[in-house]
Length: 115
Image (cartoon, rainbow, N blue to C red; front, side, top):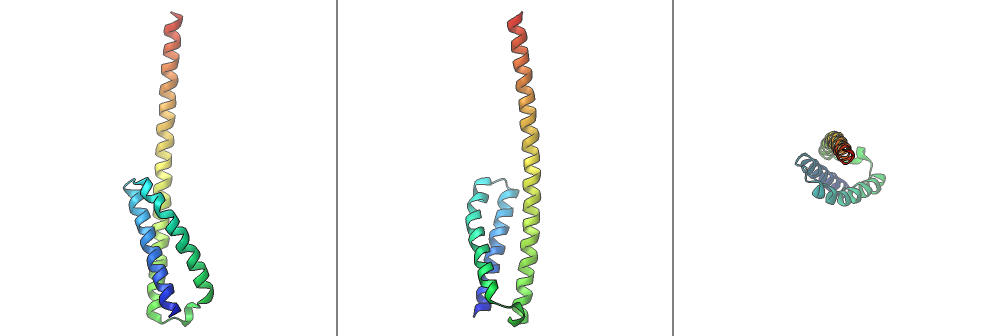
């Protein structure tokens, strides 16, 4: 029975991380953030449940499915991290360009006042 609970928790975490990745890919940042609470809750539950269940006591089919979920989750997390890093770099560049542009405008305005 505990094995089924562990399997369900991995299935749910897999779904949540997948949704987070989809939201990041589509740049739906508010939706991405809204999944974080569920992600945190499921992660904590898995830690607690995992402490009481030994994987080697689960049926092979459950172990195989859980391993698949773990691989998926890790892949999704890696992709999510890369998307966020890429987007952060893009935003940093855009902000830098905006600041540079604003500095040029300020310089032109200062020159115009001096003339």
